[in-house]
Image (cartoon, rainbow over all chains, first blue to last red; front, side, top):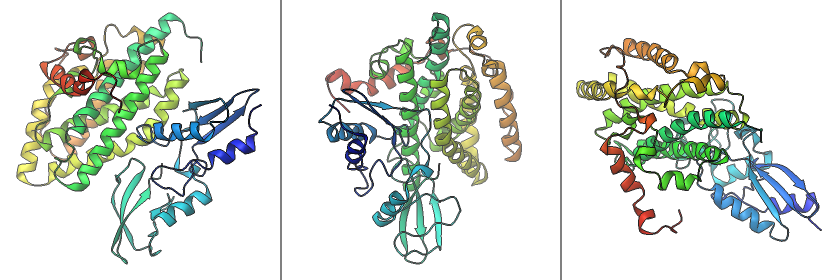
Length: 148
Length: 257
């Protein structure tokens, strides 16, 4: 007897991004198809960036979260991850953690003081998915999830 | 997975292996700049880019594994230099910053042309990954275009160093456009735009424009292939690189990342 889809999704929503503890991989948009078979569960995961060193770590945490049932995890590439796949709740979690969510416009709000008086410093932050910004009002450097 | 015939499989391996090796070697040489680039922001940027490149190589190695080659780890750690198919210029040890920026700009433009052409493949596991890779590579090309422009228009010294870097690299670029053996496999894969002559042509047009815009002396046509890395021909530099890269693995085979 395998888990129900709801149970699987609920378990996956407890698997957090290793760097942002309030952001689940579900809200990050990394969970693709979930297939519930007779006696096994298959979870498709979508890598955010191909070279992200956290991918193995996330896979192990998914296996742990679903350890009650035989699970097959596949990394799929047929629909590339894009930053628009982050959910509303995910965007909020990012902001609260001090990382600006991705934006379609040039305007980026400082996650600390909310000011729009910010400037782009570099497309490369301390991890593959982040760019560097600086807030002119609260003098705070901060990162933003790259829009891809 | 598609049912691939033996000749299609061979053609795909012939196509993907050099690209994987280029990305890996470029990523490895890039990682050697860690903590040594001219400023902190560059250090973040270049290590991020190198990590991307190695991620792209890993994707290609996994694809090669699915086509019957050994695993990614085995391909990286256990191959002798003569089985690597990267363009030999990419194994050149790092010199000064301008040399690296020159090499990387020249490489990223080719990589952009090559990846765009790869999207025309009928092999979906490849095009899925390439689509993703292009989203990431866009930032690399931007970065090294800016770096190249900065050095060309910065000080007399930066411009001089850039020109010297280009002069060192240019005569050794040829196998970057080449493939191992005959190009018949490209027909099989429906990718005529990846033929050596096509790649070189598209690349040269973009270079001529850049050199013209920045008023850099045009080094002339890229000479023909002398050393072809695609056929496993390399300099001692690759063996040295592999010795360093596999050192830990050679001490302890079971050591994980």
